[in-house]
Image (cartoon, rainbow, N blue to C red; front, side, top):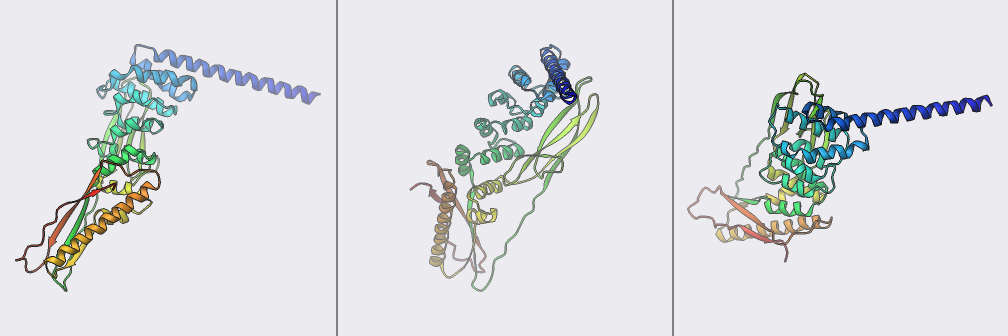
Length: 354
């Protein structure tokens, strides 16, 4: 009986603690909502900061509503209270793991690409936004992140655009019988930048987000692809300034496009590269023989391209109609006697559907 009485007492005490905890959480949520309604940017920032760290479903709609009301801040000047408030608001949304509707993020796509992409990655209905961010004029890291996310989702519209921008070539090197042809190579590099970040006096601490390739310890994987993209978090304490570095490995978009095709076809990048950019060496045994060999090389490349696209079609991405691929041939003449010109080669148009 004493044991039962003690158990009841413990349960009552636990219930009281739980109720007290829920009461405190509700009070904090109410305080955060009230601060978000303030006309002072510093108060609104503290409201967003606490809302993000409550991880409460009660704060989802108030935070989303702040994005709706903040469209006018899309071009806020760096260092201003308005800019600082937007940093805190984006951080709160990311920290609280909410999904902000893509249409509310659209005004911020140009100037706030890093946090926007982090939030869009959570939204299964964000394809239109990601397609806008994957256009050619976007910075490399933004283009890569958006493209990775679209590739992960098997976006048909993105795939159609990808094929329309793929660069395809075929290099023919002609040399004298019994000699050889040489090839060259290139190396990649990196782009890095360093800066400092500080919030206006009295503002809450905030995390600033930057996208990068070459994911480092402490960064968070955001979008997998031919080159993975992670985001790096830099915390700026209240009334402090911190330095931060942001960098990403340089890359050629044409290489990434080939990498996406390889990923979609379950092939290696080198296999796809040999299809899109083959190099054929030919011994010179007369103009007619060279012309025939070049045509045969282009025929074989066309069939390889069709086989590649069929592999991708087998996993659900249709070969798009209205898109034409073009193979641009290049002829390098390494013969000792060039008095007889090699036959010119026109670009080879490939009809994707026939």
